[in-house]
Image (cartoon, rainbow, N blue to C red; front, side):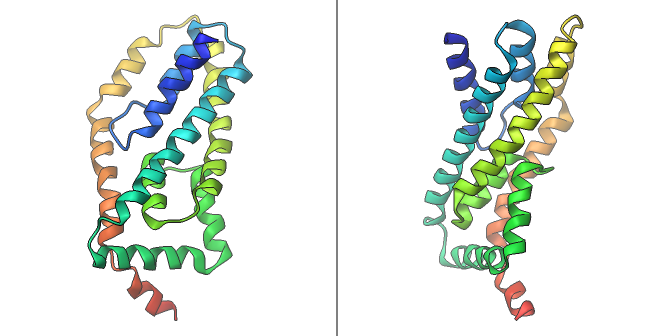
Length: 188
């Protein structure tokens, strides 16, 4: 039971942080390689922790929106209206939470800033994590004999990994600085 609680705490903390955290896959892989936890429970624990961590991050981001200047708040309101205007836009947005090339921290920060309902985003993210974490765990169990520690260390500290985190920090800033109302005027 303690192994599950520690796994939950690590994954939750990683997903609560807005940036500069290690990816979750090394945690899943290390647990898969170094413990005898049944894979379905390991994956489920990690996916629930990840989803709850991101949900709380989105809620905290929503609190920050009220501190922004009025112009930025209007930009966020216009972006929210663009998303909510058509059902297809909402479905596409939810699809990003399942299979996304964008870091999930920035997606939840943006969703929180926009004030969209977070539970559908969280459920979509949870479904995606179940798939990803199952793949990571399954692969790790198959590769137990190989030495993966050096690969993990390189990934976590690579200049490219750090540079990507710095770039994606700028995405929420771009979100609040963009005048989304001009896109609304164009579509009207």
